[in-house]
Length: 267
Ligand SMILES: [Zn+2]
Ligand SMILES: [Zn+2]
Image (cartoon, rainbow, N blue to C red; front, side, top):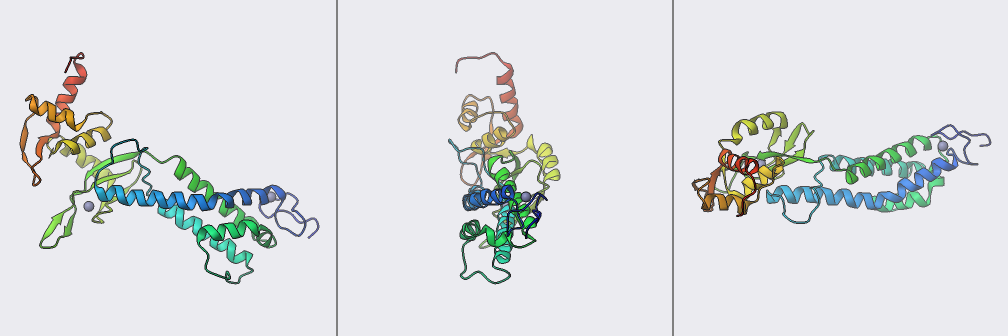
């Protein structure tokens, strides 16, 4: 293969290879990241399920929620490009044993020369490098989440239809938010409009209110909401099934606004 060009970048390839030295290195570097990335993407998916399952955000020192609607796609894409490259490296044959995706990447990394002997190597390097870069971007810079309200979707309960009280969070740019508890799909644009319309006259309990308002960017704790109620600055409108007092969102927003525009006063 003397004088062979790299099928990825066109520079002179290494001997007996369709890849140049730098492209071979790019491939090795990308493959080296795959096992950890697969793990990170799986963690992101699990957190997504757990968070939505609990229907609330966990308080505490956790970072912004790594909820990725794209994590499943990134995971599948990464698995697919690795698998295709592996099949090519095996010259169209099947891998000797069923390897985990992480081990497929490790095996490929140790056998890049098998991939490099195919003229299609350039395409595969490009696909792997792009899939790895996409996954890294997803893990490193999760899109901030927007709050899309309580699901209120219907699902079949044990005795009768029940309404879903899971709270919906999704990247702000998502077009659709799917409730992980009941599976209802919500159009985010309509949800936003509905939230704005309904927010003022919605009634909910203190911790959910605190969460909803905080998600909109204003900090208020549930303890503070209860304090306002104790002092009569807001009133409760009955209780929910679990006995939690219900407050009107608009009242709480008014109280918050009043506090923000008033000079500091000792509690
Ligand atoms: Zn190259
Ligand atoms: Zn739901």
